[in-house]
Structures are given as structure tokens and as C-alpha cells.
Image (cartoon, rainbow over all chains, first blue to last red; front, side, top):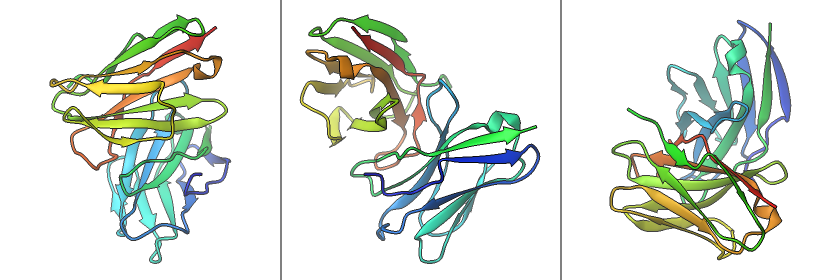
Length: 108
Length: 113
């Protein structure tokens, strides 16, 4: 079973921030949080990852709670091209388990 | 840099046959992982190779195997195909071991009839 729980779907207005939550209450100390997205019919695309500090790159920001039991991926200004399934995974590199993810629809 | 390439992109096989899929990672990447994606089971990890050695393996039967060559290119083989093996098979490469900052190819769509 996946170690993460995500809402199955979300909508976001174009130009607004998209905040995608992920619960990983059983995360252990050496496990990282990774985010990927998959646009229909394409291979998944790496977005960002972190251990316990907040991270930001050109695509998104990752906010991890202090107890590390949940995190939020933030797309600061969502565009129609951000419509995709977003996967949150946790792994200590022995194996990786993808859950069903969150289907994000960006609405004009 | 060129991205991850997978060949063939589409394949139709018959039950009982075997199939070999190929993956060329991004230049300089030495880690290659394989995944199976189906509508029912989602994205599932098959195995990971680094420097020609299998490092991690998912929960798949022994009919699924793989290998990596000295140039980091990788192949996966499925023997005695079953209808349930119909799936999108994705390959991903990384420039570091123990990193899931991976770059995926477009996948091979396998249909078993």
C-alpha cells in the first residue's frame, strides 16, 4: 500500500495558486517526500523533493510540516498546462510506491 | 541533452510469448528504473539498476526480469506473457543512486491478446 494519502481530485482557477496536500503520517526519519506529475499519455515528470526543510525550485514549492506527517505542493500561478495527475511519494530508496495521486484540473 | 528513449513505443503480443523492451537513459545517467502502469493498479515499481547491478526490486513475479549494459542502456524482459501484462511500461533514469529525482521516458505500450 502507498504510504501517502491524497485527495482524488482538485480544481484550481487559472492564475491562482494550486495547493496540493499529501498526508504521510507513517513517514520515518530517513524517508524523503517526492512529488511527480503525469500529464495524460506522457511519462511522469519530477517536480521537487525534500526531507524536512521547505524547498523551492522553478516549478513549485514544497512545504513539509514540522512533524513531517504531511506536506503541500504549491504551484504559485497555475496554468492550463498544469492540468495533470500529481503524485506524492515517500521513500527511503529501498522501493518506491505510487498511490493514485490527485487529478488537478486548472480551469480557465 | 536528449531525454530518455524507449523502444518500441507500441507492441502487440500474444499470450505465452515473451517480449523485450529497451531503454536508453539520459547521457551520463547510470541508474535506470522500470515501472508498470495499468488503469487498475496504477504506477508500480518493477526494478532499478545501477552500474549493471539490480539494486531494488518490486513485487513482481520472476517472469519479469531486466538487465543493464555497460553503457547504462537497459532492457526488461517479460516471459510467458499473460493478458494482465498489458500495460504502459515506463523507464526512468537518474544520475545518482538512491535518488528518485528521475526522468521518465514516454513508455512502451504493450498489448497482450
